[in-house]
Structures are given as structure tokens and as C-alpha cells.
Image 1 (cartoon, rainbow, N blue to C red):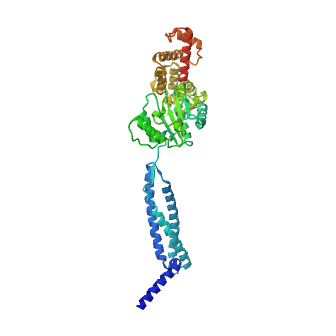
Image 2 (cartoon, rainbow, N blue to C red; image 1 turned 90 degrees about the horizontal axis):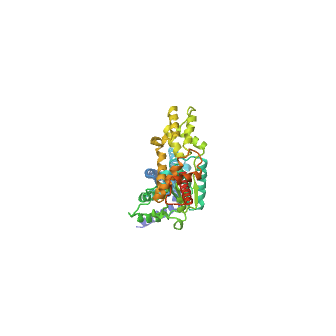
Image 3 (cartoon, rainbow, N blue to C red; image 1 turned 90 degrees about the vertical axis):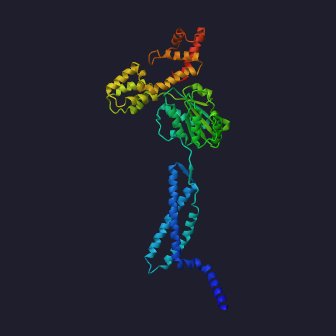
Length: 456
């Protein structure tokens, strides 16, 4: 009995002594166990990192944003594995001295392994991520792909004016005639504005407004899934969602008439101080009706700028058709849409075909060539047709007649106002207006509306 008590006492004393010296003795006498534990943890971490890497790669293919803690874990794991590999190389070198171990070297290595193992274990413990990323809201394909932005004086000036204006005011109007490049410029503004705003979104209004389609596009950009089905309910959901984003630029392209943005769900003014609006329109009066604080006109290209654009789009490398090409480019009157459309249609054509096209331009028979100018005539026709819709039908008819009357004057010739008024009265414009002075006022007003509509 006394022997067993003594034996237990000795064992207990030994354990207590080992607690004091074990960290040091363990490095000497438990080297094999320490190496094995380290190797197991190293293998587990390597396997776990491979699985997390696989999940991250899959998430990126699904255009998800990877969480910061996941990215941080991967960096830490990479660092620890690099250091672990260095220690593993040290272990292999120690093995080379198996029959004549260097005890000081082994002790230091054992200590390093014992200290590294719990760090790796802690990384393993924190690697169970429920999700590695989340679905990002879309950026907008309009701002990812390259635009056909023409670096002309008028475009650069308008771009700079808009970028300055969005820092100071809430509503900006960009207006100009059809085909002058308003949409392209608006997209270029959107690209630049992504550095200034949390979110930039663009949608097209056009004449036939589809509110639900616009709501779907805007909601998609903000990562919102509608829970209601009515336009009003969806507008409220979108309104609340956008209020949680600090700085937003909304580009409303091709606006034809006054429109209440809240019908879509766009918070603006007192409802959202950080939401700025850029609208594009063919008609200056739309800017006025929308109470734009800044109105910017986009003009046509200069003669030299028009030629550079035409030459590049037509791929003209030799001088054989240079002179006739310059004449054709001049017929496009500085409109980028017309220049690009005509240049592409005549690209790789023979000199005779260039001459034929030039003659058709001069003879005005090109107006019936839909293959060449269909894309140009369509927006012009829309603006012409809208003269009726934008006014009452009777007034619209007479404004259209006034436009057609202007087209009878020789090309590039200044139209004398008094002569135009005399011709208009002679043709019976505004028959319900009886005094000549009143007729004169009506015709002058019609000309102003044509100019503001971008047709003159």
C-alpha cells in the first residue's frame, strides 16, 4: 500500500515537473509527434484552401462579388502554406542527419513547428464559409463596351459642360437635332460618371413609353426583385430601394415630352438629394418643361471633323476617291449618324460607285435609297411626324408645311425670313388667322419650333 502511494506521489511530482519543463523537453523528446501533427495540419489546410478556391472561382464565373473575409482568409492561408512549405523543407534537411542529429537545429525546428501548428488549426477552424460571395448589381452593358464617341470640339465641350454641371445641379438637359450623337455622348458621360457616383443607370423613353420594361431595367441595375405586380407598386419598391444608394446618376435618353419620373420610381429632388438626372431630347422645349437647371446643346461636326470621321469609317487608304469622297462627306452636313451610315455603305466600293453615289446625293435621289440612308431618315421622319403630336393637329400640319416650304429653297442658301413669310401666306398657312401681322407671328413661331425640334 505504501509503495503504491509512493509511486503515485512520484508520478504526480513527475507530471508537475513536466508541466514546468515540458515546453522545452517536448521540443527534444516529442519531435516526431510534433512533425506528424504539423504535417497533418498542413495537409488539411492545403485541401481546405483548394475547396475554397474552387468555390470562389465558381462564384466569380457567376459574376458574384467575393466577401472580404473570404479574400482575407485565402491570403492568410496562402501565406501560412508558403511558410509551412519552408518548414517542411527544413524537416527534410534534418532527416539527412538521421544518424548524427544536430540537437540544437532540431530543437529550434521543433519549436517553430509547435508554434505554427495552432495557427494553421485556427485557420482551419475559421474556414467554414456559408457563402463565399454575393450577386453584384449590374454595371450596365452601355458603360462596359466601347462607344463610338467622336472626340470633336462640340462633343468635348458638351461632355465637359455636363460633367461640371452634374456636380452643381440636379437636372441637366442635352438637346440637339436627330443623328447628332446625343445618345453616344450620354453613354460617354455615364462612363466618366462611374467614378463620381455609386450607381449610373440609363434607359430610353422614346415616343412609345413602356414603363414596366423601364422599371425592369432599372431594378435589374440595382439588384431589386419586385414583390408587387402593378406599375404603382413596382414604382414604390424601386423608389425605396434607390433611396438607400447615396449617389446616383440617371440618364433618360430620347425624351419627347414632359414626364414624371416618380411614375417609374425614380426618387428626385427633396426625395433624394444625391440623385442627378441627365436627359437627352431633340426638342429644347422638353428641357424647359422638365425644369432643367442646365441646358446644353450638342452641335454638328465641323467640316474637318466630319471628313476625319467619314474617312475612318469608309476605310479610305488611297487617294483615288479622296476628292469625290470629300464631296459625299460634305453632303452629310456634319451629322455623325449620316456620316457613319453613308461611309459604311460605300466602304470598299469602286471609284465609279463613289461617283454615282455623289451624283445621287446632288440629284436628291438618295432620299429614296433606304439601303444607304434608312437609319438616317427614320429619326428625321419621327421628328417630322411629332410636329403634329407635339401640337394640336391643325397647328402641327401648318408647322410641317412650313418645314416643307423651307426645303424648297436652294441647298445651303440663307432663307430670307420675309420671303418665307410671303410664301407661307400665299400658300394659305394658318387660314384661321386673318390679319397679316398675326399670320407673320404664327409663321415666326413655327420656325422657332422647328429650330427647337432640331429640324432647322
